[in-house]
Length: 312
Image (tube, rainbow, N blue to C red; front, side, top):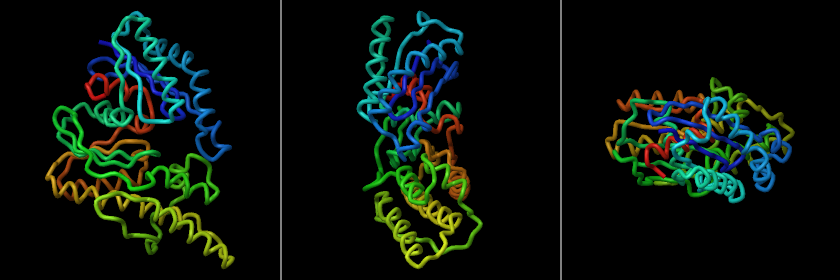
């Protein structure tokens, strides 16, 4: 069975085809990063218009790379929530219309479940139960996942998502959007420093306070006419942001005694995060699963995989 996936929830237009063994036959992604960089972030109206322009060429390229025709597609899946409303609508309407024209089932997929399914695409041996940490520009959530891939939310952010905090701190430092990779590239984690903020609310994630602490520190240094030490600030922020994840996940792993952890979403591409979670899981005797770097960000293969798994 061949599943065609469509993803347009933010600023990537993507179409993919996978089979029922989770083999990716094609996964075409057109990013709008260069378009939105001049604004310092994604402009929803511009994103939606570009999805409309890109969706048909991306579909054609996905079919060409998979060496398939539309008549061979057995079902169509598309992100239907959450995301930028106008952007989501483009993919949802396109997917429904395509499925109707082909007379095949249309599978609505929750974008968060798509990220979770990226773990299965990257790791054929992955089987729940597990804890799943989703870290992205819009979400910071820890799920408990049972054998049927049904989820129970254990912890979420009280304010900003971790990826959003990365982007906002990067903007203040004069780094280009998206900020996460730029902060990671500039962070010197070998430096010795006192964490700028190391206290967080219990039973929730929170990044508003950390973001404010970094901004206040930068302003304070500027007022004293001190040079901004970019590698140190980036390292300090990255340490505090990821350390919070480690503390919370450790608590829930110890409480639940679950021995499998998946970490997914755009921020899971962060190399420091990957290294620190590997250390944590080795210490606790927990098996760690991560998506391949190309599947960490938004893509249509993960949407198709969620449909195949039956998690919508």
